[in-house]
Amino acid sequence: MRTQVAIIGAGPSGLLLGQLLHKNGIDAVILERKSGDYVLSRIRAGILEQVCIDLMDEAGVGERMHKEGLVHGGFDMLFKGERHRIDMNKLTGGKNVMVYGQTELTRDLMDARAAAGLATVYEADNVTVHDFDSARPRVRYEKDGTTHEIECDFIAGCDGFHGVCRASVPQGAITEYEKIYPFGWLGLMSDTPPVHEELIYVNSTRGFALCSQRSHTRSRYYLQVPLSDKVEDWSDEAFWQELRLRLDPEAREKLVTGPSIEKSIAPLRSFVAEPMRFGRMFLAGDAAHIVPPTGAKGLNLAATDVKYLSSAIIEFYREKSEAGIDHYSDRCLRRIWKGERFSWWFTSLMHRFPDDGEIAQKLQEAELDYIVHSETGARSVAENYVGLPLNFGE
Ligand code: FAS
Ligand code: PHB
Image (cartoon, rainbow, N blue to C red; front, side):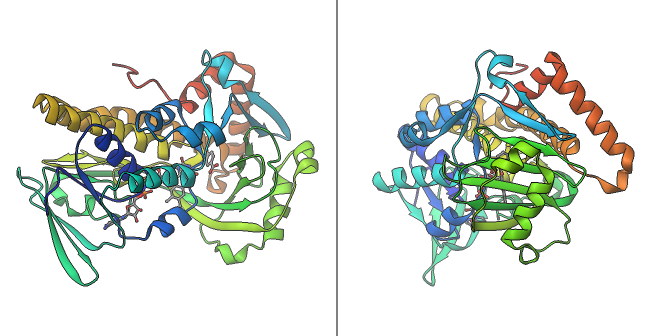
């Protein structure tokens, strides 16, 4: 079998790349090790930056997102028992974010790909990548006991943090930067109305909490928990009780609880692999970088990688130019490190670090008090949260 681009992974990165290439007449095959239902069952991101929204429109799959997505012009920061709104729309000259779950975005992309009859191999086992440092890279996989080989011009490693592509790069050719945080996020999804019309980020002496949402009838909540906690340690009632203890009186009063429809604990890490290009193989999304989800950057950074990679591959075929693919890694990393910095900073500001002593809480509260009473401080948070312009610093 031959294709122009072999995409490994049918998460948001792989599916969005496949759709953008298809819209530009470029043939791609997606190999995904799980089933489509399994991919859709993973509950992950909830906030889209304008860059991601624009890419979904460019890919021709934005209709339901615009119909069902919720536009948010601000969010609250709760500390010392008081809430303060960061008016992103005012502070950034009219920019917003959109609440639209990664699950729905992935579903839209999957449906579009199936409707166009494009090749996606789900439950592809033992994917391996070969000769990506040559002009004739190959991919192998097993399906129903038969081994298949795909010849291609490019391999897109969209296979996430635990994927095969980054792992196939010789150790001397790649540098990995990592920071592991001493806590996790216990997430709960419930079919209950959100406690507030916008998100609430909580800095509490008991630990971080986040009140998010997916729609007017579906809520998403997170609690900072010790790394030693297991999800089975947390009953729904224990979750709601702890959340109430971290909220302000108004939110506590308005909180509507109900049975969890999903509950899981995610570890937090900052991770970047450099470079992101190895001959004819490119890493995009979580395959190359991970952020702590505090800044809602994970999915959005993946979308920007895909924007740069799709443009580079389109330019290669259309203009026989390698300029885009030569600059892909540097362009991505310049934006990725700013997303990493904001996510690390916001995580450091909002979470309890018991080993840093009581002074850490006082310093966090002082910084929060400065931010919510300083237009400069608030604007810095706002412009990073809505997403820096694609050409920032260029
Ligand atoms: P993904 O990991 O989504 O997709 C990679 C795909 O590759 C998967 O479907 C996987 O099955 C497949 N794959 C892996 N190895 C393979 C192989 N060898 N062969 C074939 N296929 C293979 N971001 C936020 O902004 N906010 C959040 O709240 C948030 N919460 C998260 C919670 C968790 C538990 C995780 C892991 C991530 C979270 N993220 C969050 C980040 C998340 O949204 C990612 O940024 C997003 O999924 C990135 O998409 P992809 O790069 O496509 O990677
Ligand atoms: C979510 O809704 O899952 C979400 C929202 C904002 C974040 C992280 C996660 O910062």
